[in-house]
Length: 496
Image (tube, rainbow, N blue to C red; front, top):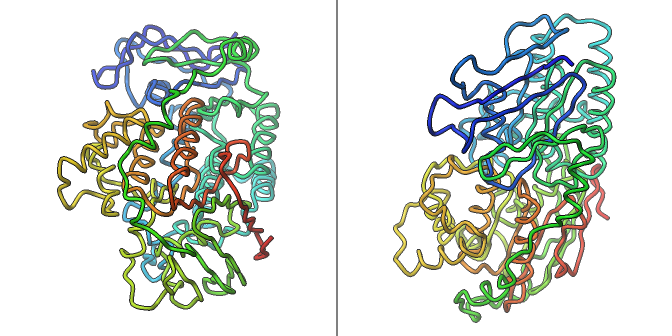
């Protein structure tokens, strides 16, 4: 059997890139592999070794990309990382920029121009490639996105764009980190079907890094598990699923509820009757209307699930509540019993809100210790501009302990895995005991056990007095039991 990628006793040249033991890994012809493991186990480190980003000693990794006639590893292996899904095209991106179109640089590319460039650079314009492009565009609704600036895309739309751009390059091996997060149910199934069809029709082999093991698609033939920076032997998908069913999930600390409720809080600090009141809210950018005639009232203590297809306007709606969208001043919106535009500052609004989202993760560029990021949530800063006192740091440590990341308090943000980064940002959202929690896809990149833990934390937090929540989640089965109301947005401007 032809070995497409072969690594034997691989040891990274740089000590900080090394796994706990030498790496053995093989991808054979016609195999499709899922790399699984807990957050921080070393999955991304293994991917960097496979792609050659982390060179190894000796003769290194061996590649045979037949029948491809391209010689460079980078031409044959395309790697989409978690961070790429939030955009690597916008180094000057900041959180509110998506809602402030006058802040967008004139050189910012549109989705269509980026895809045209990728297509033109990736090979000859054959009938087969044109057909593949048309199929990808139809499947993911790219024509609707083509005129939009990249910076204005939702996280789900961004993921679609990156996937299509990469597939247009016709790689021999596609390695992708968590391909299904941020996609609605329909788009997830479309992508699984697309991968299956492409793996059957083309000489494309797929390696996926996956945190939510329920999402392993059925075209996967083998699984490689990474545990504690050790790469386990490759086994078949059937063997992995049988072992997983037998072992079950690890038990989550039963004291989570007690820990959450024990964190000191001032129950009388917040007493808003109506958290959000929107009357006939319409949001448009140029000729494109995103939201139309939205009426929405959220009362103190309600817990809402906000759902809808990618691009239906969920993030735009939340930006109005978070005071990030300047169009709020032209709308009839009341937040925390105070009408927008009545003289309040955005910081007076934000002090009530704990917030985490793909956009926030996308905008976070401060490589500072994790505890300082959590502490930034006390004053709604992206970095740390005011030194917390020891009592405040102790509160930060309590929330980091609740999310199982206390030992990472001195680790810098960019040294953390994507799942660990998400846990840090979650702790940041909870740390000031907010009146309103806005959790936009909070489980992004979390492994099975950390998703369960986070759901338990959310449910325990909502037992506190005067706590209201809005949560966006594309997996209905992951919604916490405390959800009491639902809001569904349809794409094409209709409100359910």
